[in-house]
Amino acid sequence: MGHLGFSYVGLIFLLMLTVPNLIWTKHQPKEYNYQNENKVLLVLERVGQVCVTCTVLMFSDFNIRSWSAWSLWLIVAFILMILYECWWIRYFKSNKTLKDFYSSFFGIPVASATLPVVAFFFLGVYGKVIWLMVSVIILGIGHIGIHLQHLKEIQSKF
Image (cartoon, rainbow, N blue to C red; front, top):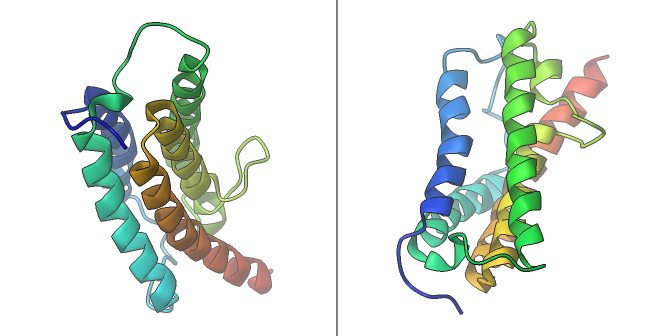
């Protein structure tokens, strides 16, 4: 179920997620248009964002514990977040086109959506908090779904 209490690891993950997105607001692709996003996916994304944010901060189970094989889940989650940061660095150095924004990274499709979703899911596994895993699945369906929708639109133009 999870132990209530503040998670500094959750806060670190949220900062790794939020800071590049705040910078992105000033560096969006010129052609970026969110008007035609699927409303069901958008609701799932928003509900997932709220649930993930609250859950990742309010359970202390995500904080670092003594080393065990289970710690590998946290390490993999953190590596995925580092890859996410690297994806952003590549994006900010690019021409900032829609193609750049919805690009894959090391073979991971729509990496800007997929990497953090999988990282937060693995964080949920590490903490053994089903609430985070369910929240991330809801978020992932919406967020990755929207990104795939945009990617499909871009690919149909080429």
